[in-house]
Length: 467
Image (cartoon, rainbow, N blue to C red):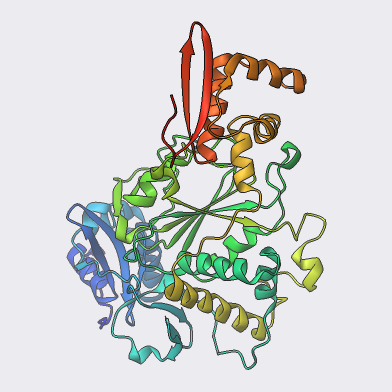
């Protein structure tokens, strides 16, 4: 429990005004300021009050002291503080504050909490339980509290946001169920289930006519997650490759990091460490620190372009990809359909309650089913095209027969005759196209050289390689 503030200055007649620095530190301790130990070498400034904890800064502490002096001290003391503020409040001086041990506030493996102003909700496989804060035995990070009141919706009619999500899944029950588990995975603040994946959102028509099809609703999904969890939004258009400070807004309490609208030619390998090992955070002018895997935020990527990878097991097991239906466009928005802007004052309490309850049912579905995979719409085709070109994939689908030897030079010549508009590539690149096509279709690519004649075969893996 916080103690009362204490006077940390002397202002006697005939004597110079003086600020007592040890009393100043005692005052800060009494009103709840402390150093929170993240690990043996890293601390952050926090304030604890009424069983709630929030991160703070030297700047805020100075402002609090200044306001306190304005209300309780003479102008001479205020001037003394203003002249020597860098001496009275500095990073070294603040190390004298009480030290608190960091207590993890992550969800358990089998449940998750949503904190609101009036109550908090505990979500399990069995359902959603509404509880009073007096039933919470742990300190709560204030940043986790959603600044709205919540009550269970009075009827089962879907809210606008749930209808919006159904539209993103073609109103297909299986895709909608998979979509909900994806949202639930991102909302669940726990890593013990063993699914270290980044969620990647694409558009259904990504890459069609070599154009980016934006405005489909991916950013609204990110906004919805921000309404529920402590999130960091990173615009892909402003992201600088190789920047030391690209993660500087991430904190120990961050739940989700969303990299939105990533540019073309992004390499998924750049995110491997963040997904499976933890995150190094380097803030300007401060010592970097590591957020371990179990405490690190979950990762969401969205793009209008294919996020590239080598296609190996290491790549595939780290990504959970989902294609959004192009139900919405820049010319046909959710606001036009529903007559109101999502997450704004246009929403009444009923829509807000239905939104939060729907998000909690997403988490419940994830706890019940884990991440559900669904069949690709156009994604596999887009991946195949990215490894060669649409014309080659079309040619290979028509002309290649598994377990049949083909002359490589004659094949390339025939392809170039069929598709004269395709820029001629080297024999080496053409071989790479064939290899990728073979792998994508579950075959092994083999070659042989007989008297200067090069042949290849796409052998089914379950069959012996025929010599």
